[in-house]
Amino acid sequence: SRQQQPSGSIHNSNNSNSNSGGSCWGVGRLKVLSFSILLGTCAILGHAVPSLYTQYYQTTTTYNPTHHHPQQQVQFPYELTWQVTMRCIYALSLAIMAPCLDGLALAHLDCIDGASQADFGKERMYGAAFWGIGSLCAGVGIDRFGFGFLYVMTVLTAVVSYVAIGVYLVGLRRDTTGAFAAAVVVPPSSSSLLVTVGEEDWNGIGYLGAEQQRRPTTSSRNTSSSNPTGGENNKTSAMQLFSLICQTGYGKALLFFVFALAVGISIVDNLAFIFFDTLGSSNTMNGLTVVFTVIFEVPIFYLAPRFLQKHGPGKLLLAAGIAYIVRVLGYTVAPHMSVVLLLETLHGVSYAGG
Image (cartoon, rainbow, N blue to C red; front, top):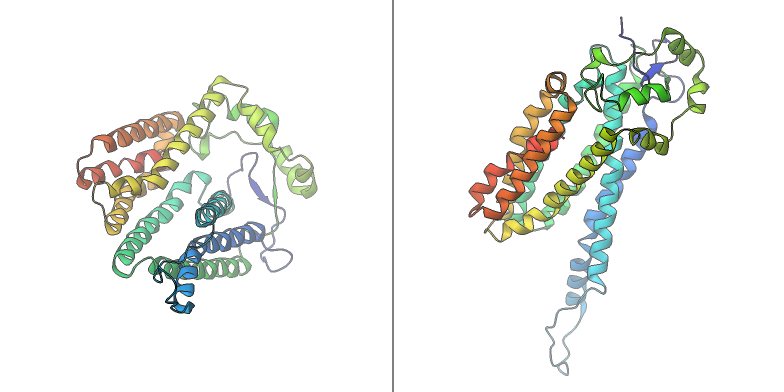
């Protein structure tokens, strides 16, 4: 039988063997995910607008001998503002997409037999692997065909993403196990959250395996299952969660550490390629650097449940921070891209471990 679920997890409100009736499980997240994909795709394609504008006016403007500079290039008005806007929209799409995907994966793992949220790393490693493959293909394609290849690749990957969402929905609707029937969320109580951010039982914030998580009482589970609307009225707000985490020094330190690490990784992800240009890198080499980041990222994601059980989340976060420091300091003394490729393997520890 299915193990008892921790507070804050998803439970089926009935044991029906069909998911054909009513609203389908996960539709809300999938709608948000679809919107974020559309938003990101439009943002990437929007970067091509200035060049298309320039090409259009160059081909439609006739030669005028009275002009002193008839070959002067037509500039897109407010090009920098436009490009920054597209970049902000793309960042917004990622901010929507990433937590939506993570939440969907965690909820899915929580519903099926033989799996738990501790297996999230094993699911996440597929995203890391295809991230490396896609980056290498993009780098090779840009060097060979120009930036037009990136725009074509963006459209194709968006189409593939929508097809994957459709296939996933079909699979949910055809589910006969009842695992994805109408589910209700058991909201975590304040006491359980305080245990979560404590330092005594869990070695910090996180979990040491599904077996060691605090379980809700039988009465609370029965009440949640029989009263689907009760959970909606007792949802914990984001500010309440934030204040609960900040009640301990460990929680405050963790939030600061995660924020600092995320800022650092964001700087590397967005500006590293510009720095690599000074070392003579090509687009293909830039794509290869992503492959080297994935080399260690995939196995660490796969072994994440074991690492969490053996070392706990606190030590993994420290390892992630140390790996990041060594990596960026190594950039400053790297004489050649071959050294950078070796340093990129530390990204697996700083990202997957963090």
